[in-house]
Image (cartoon, rainbow, N blue to C red; front, side, top):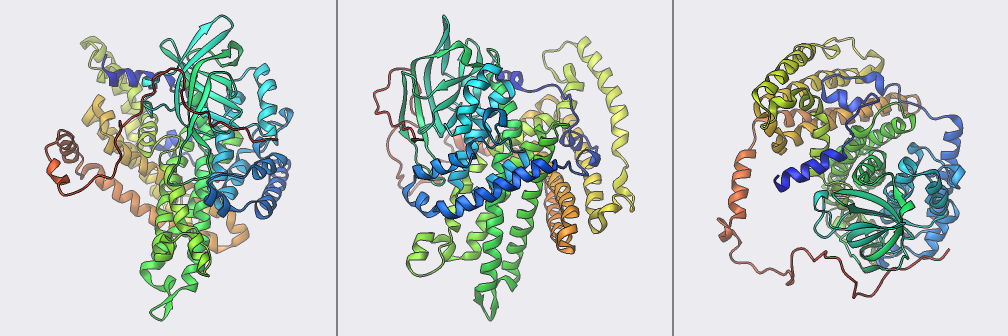
Length: 625
């Protein structure tokens, strides 16, 4: 078996293969616009809403009165007193049930809290979200035993910081290469290995560690002060300078067997299931940054005058301000809808959460880039420098740097494309089965062809016509109805395109990453349009036509992007790009690099992740209570 085949097999074993609950996203990619699954959007109880609003008020006051974002940016450290203050207001227990000492907030209000924090200090949002979305609380909530929950969740709710450790020096998105081991020894497991980029790892009290038990990967809760654990260094980054992210080495670390989460071999499934809702924290932080950018763009576009009028009235700048504001509204709508669906628990939201992460991170980055452009030289200048010379200290360049990691965190854009695409084409792969398996014999292929013929004979005719072709469809959405008709028509076109791709490339479709990425991006635009129309219809009760106007403009922009992506499904340079890339890697065009000097330091591209006793100084520190 090739290395690629091994990696693919590991990833497939970790997938949730069952769809026990309906999924708007799954049906969207199948050409079935199930608006009834998301509209009307589920609502929280009055008690949940009161609890959420009360905490947002408390959090707003704390941030305003006790947090100076400039200090965090300048010192690259979140002050201990800020962490203590967050503990005091219960911010580390937002998602933890009240029976364990947490606040028990809904997903919706957890996301709104992160949105608020991220608009003010993205590093602070990263601390809180890493602790609760991927750290100890979420995996234990889903897979922990009653005893584990009683032991660890109250500690997390009180503010003992948790971290998630999967990545290694030679392991990014390919878990098949995981080298950290956990070997059973009596009533304990012995951990050996090195973990990289452990967000919160420098200050963590509790760790979720992924390690290999035999041929499979398992998950453990580990006390951060266990003998044999060394935080060898704290990493420094272009953005999020306040995050305590490090390199952690395990050398003969004994972990009680009762700290195993779930069963042996369930580690990756636990990680992926945790991220089904945990991923919502990242687009929530993107929404906060985007909304802040909309505020700055509006104020600056009015204040700055060039060529006789405010720059926002010039079309070139006005188009960017329109994009920033409309798209920030849409990102929040996507997060809002996904959060409500997560709270409702009647839908499977694995695709919706992944789409929210992908869309939020990509669009927020474009928003931040446009904001820097609108601000001109002031966008490139630091807030500290602006303030020092007597101007308003607007941290636009910091926001750009802070947002960049979101296209990599918790699954890079490229990996998210493949992850979502795998779910989007699952029905086709399931029905095709042996038909596209090169190892299947002729008899098996014949049976598969019969099954596939029956499926497509029923499915394909349903993609020809639908509600999107009726001028009266979705009339309850008023002036936005034509956009939902577009979504319905286009999701059927998207499903047909996926089928054409499947027919053309069959089993090799998984290697057509450009095609699959565009399929996913079209689906993301359709999901965003749907969420935006739903939100605007609700907001119209409070904001009148203003909500409908901004949603209409966003949908017009999204339609143009989706139509362009359809064209590029079949007219592109993918094959030429791939061919050229292989020749580049072989050194054929190294002459392009003539005439430069490389400022990189000497050293291996990837540091050794070999297990062994640490010789480095331990930089782990505990934030006192």
